[in-house]
Length: 474
Image 1 (cartoon, rainbow, N blue to C red):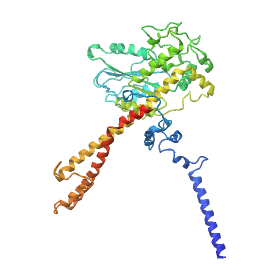
Image 2 (image 1 turned 180 degrees about the horizontal axis):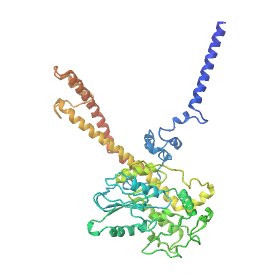
Image 3 (image 1 turned 60 degrees about the vertical axis):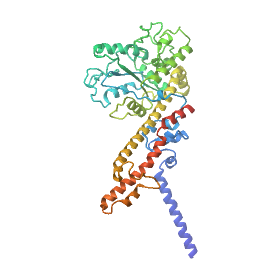
Image 4 (image 1 turned 180 degrees about the vertical axis):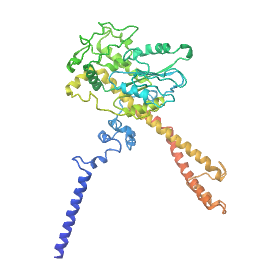
């Protein structure tokens, strides 16, 4: 009986443990996809994206713990650089002088989220003299501190002064003369510094967004398309629709027009059109024209002071703030619920859109690679600067503690074999006990500082060099 009762009690205990475990499991994993299985593969704050990359760079793993920038599409976890860039291409910190003669010029490409970013520039930057934006008015007044001169050239500050959605070719030829006409030249003895910026977007979604915009009646007829001092003729740039607009057009109709400026729009708007005879399509073959425009667009994009990507709002904000040393008031928000995102497009249609925008696809891959490399480079520089600040703080603390045992060169140098706290043994016996304990804590802290400082000085100068070496290996 005793064995039976013991067995019964053991069986009851096992059943109880199993039931308790089942209840706990249902509580922790209420759905079919148990969250516990993902805890090891996703760091806090990365939205689980980091686990899909099958590893990732050391930078992304280190940044994953509470790093808000990893959450955007898990880009850092999956990012493997494809292109090699020099340090000058990655280090984008300009000496922007808002009180001087510097001007930020925003090249606004259609359907890239430029309207949102343009509003950030006039409404969301911490400035000594904020832009004056009045209700009911599209444009804001963005004057420099103490001057009646603008520091920003964009649709929300100066309007479409060089034409509706002016491209790189138009802006570089138009902006200096427009700025000279707006402000008397005698007030500017030194030439202005123009810092060009832009926003890019995934070509397929940008193309679909433009189609939906045109479908609702947009035409952009006010665009000038000036190049080499003249606008294109009707034969050089024919219209895709016979009426006043192209409202109601289907996606098939939109893709079928060979003169549709939506095709490879980002490449064309960032390139120097003078290199291909502007809009004269007979100057060279389509492949030659596209190759020249693509290389020109890459070169101009690389040399721009800043560019952002619609798909990476937080990283765009971070790089802009670091580049111009200007801070935004409110953080950027990643919005994926766009009209283009609501369009269901078959895979074969998406592939056709990529073929129609093959230069934009290649440009965006290049831009994304450069963008993410710049972000990682900037974060490494930020960590290096933080290390230098900590070292300066340690030196400051050491300068305060050293006089307690006679100043530099007069007391024993702290070493592992001869810690500073040993000097307390020679301290006068009549020393106040509270003061001695305070000194002991400070000197013990100083002892740690010696060793930490030595370790950091060993890798201080190698941070950026290591990154460049890695890029060369990529």
